[in-house]
Image 1 (tube, helix red, strand yellow):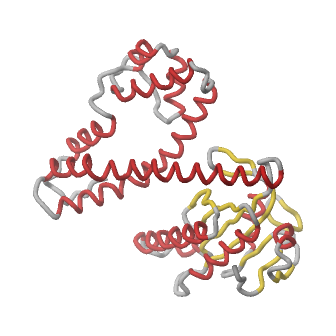
Image 2 (cartoon, one colour):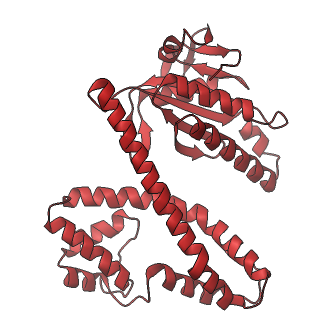
Length: 331
């Protein structure tokens, strides 16, 4: 977590100081204390904490803070008013815990890298670092989380309303896209960790720029691959084409696959045959190629030229039909 070259930084003391900032004070309460002071059933409270990814192994251990108490009091208030049911509250906690667990993992290293670089520029050691985290870096990250969440939620509401206006239901077709770096597995066997990290950082940057430029949504980045969705096939093909077009020619090539249909949405992810087909089409694609399913090709036939390929057997699908985009599309 912290660079060992910084001998003037006591990492244990630093961790304790940062924890106090993040948790809003020292640990002074046990799970049983929280249950007593909020009136929430102890079993439900334990299940709620575990759903967020925080195992409660000893109900009498002093592991919680006043901020934890305030959060559970808000939960109890919402439950008492029937704003949410216990099951819904648990589901929300589980979804939030999964998303923010991933964020914490990815942001933690970057956070300390930035903080330690700042400490290198001036005196103060641990105290200066803690002050920097408390006054600047942590509030910045927290504000970014809140800002992006509100913007994303507003965008979701707008997309949902638009779907209702078009079809009277939110359960409509979407276009699912996969794109990955062709030959990455082979490359990873002999490339240095630094080279791989740089390549993946570049891929994430180009991919997210392409998706954002054409009103898509990044579902997840999976190392050398990106999974995204769009409301219309035209936006999906524009994203894939933009990604391939912006990708540097001196790097291992990128390929993409698109499929259109219904999906099952859960915890921000998407599942179902449409997702599976998009993944299989990507694996069939050659470097610098975009391959689509029949529904996507049919929807875009008047705007783009597609070439039908011979059906191929892939995992889960016999004689899967596919079409490749011919030429660079205009969007």
